[in-house]
Length: 247
Image 1 (tube, rainbow, N blue to C red):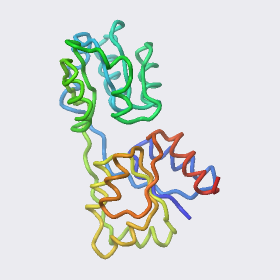
Image 2 (image 1 turned 180 degrees about the vertical axis):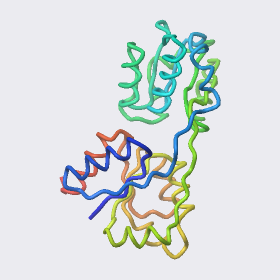
Image 3 (image 1 turned 90 degrees about the vertical axis):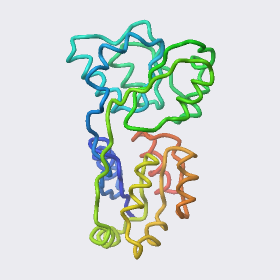
């Protein structure tokens, strides 16, 4: 039994190495490239305008921090910081040297339940994100009376692949499990699968980081979808290991 990991860049390579070290065969198929976003060049000068700063991913944090460093600037000390997941919070806390609030379950719904986002009338909030996504956070915070803005720190570029070449290879390598960590990547992956291979793909055990993506995957026809409740490599690895060992 083997796992197909679709996380981009270093995150995907690291997870594959961790799985292989644990005795679980893993292959890497990144579905997206991460490129600088349209708001990145000016973000270092804008951060001080906001009362609350929300980072939706590690990419948003690392690219923003590079812009801050290049600008010989600093993250604002008086802002309240939040992150969608634990790993993103850890990275954000490290670069800002500030306390970062995050939910135990790394999704939009649980982030919105955090105390710092309850009484926010007239608070200025920025969401550091990629090109699209996290509309629930934006809409909910607006409804609570905040002034909310997006900044596109990075953009995701889909990577095309030829399923007629890859699916037979995956079958030969006995791929039975699939890791996809975003809705956009899930839909892109399915769009690349030729009709004659779709039934085989939908029989794979799919691992996703939220209940929302679970429901989307089921609607696409996947038979077995497991919610890891987190997109961190640590939690993905723990879930895959427990599935492999049956514990």
